[in-house]
Image (cartoon, rainbow, N blue to C red; front, top):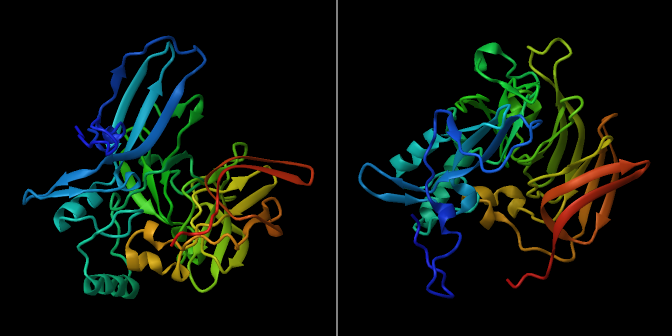
Length: 370
């Protein structure tokens, strides 16, 4: 149990339990239900997030993961049956990464906010050079952290019976053909929707070669509930940042073929921005280009080894932009500017005639103290 103290008092920090390691529950386990679940509520609820922060190596050394966003992934599954019975199971889904940390006796690779105060300038330069020159090693099925959001029924790519458990793979009348985990990068993880076993890692570049060089994608893709089409925004770092608005749908040649991927628009900007989410209406994709820019054309991520230290200081003189893409006809139709702001999540979006409404929980950009 964590015993962190609140510096303002002698009381334990109230959020310390958030850094406790959470054990797996691999087999379905009945839960005690307090109250009554409505008779019409039936299906499966998935939740994801960090499950491990502390590792012990073979030599007895402790490896501590410092930031909530960098904790090793654990996926949770709640199955609500008719009559109100609920069963639960969970599974760690980044075990290869766990073993890599233990072998190195340190957190390695690019993280969101983990810092290594012991790095020397020489080691940092060598790591940056090696990554830039040779790329990352091939990833196994659990060799990265894909922890943010699960999406069901990714079009086409995994619609293969041999990848799907036969037991109870329906949710509220909808067949769960597959489950895919997403994160803030050009990588996804296929998960068995029943056992939660990781199947493999793949990228948007595996679907379309033109996206092999894309670096980031929002952790929250948008899904059309009527058509099942998936939408995302791929960012490529460089002197000119390139944003590609992408639609993925089931192949016209049949559901067991690889999906059709269309680049609806390609937008260039001098600002490579960290976008955790974006907005979509029935007619439009709205790229919410707020201010959370990477320094040095995005190459700062390689230098610092984490996203947090790679961001530029905010500039109240730089406008935020909204890029509007017609998702029905596949073209960039408008750009709007507004006062600078930052947001993490979009809340809602809809269109009425020629008007587009986007709900955002925003933070005002202020002059940097640094």
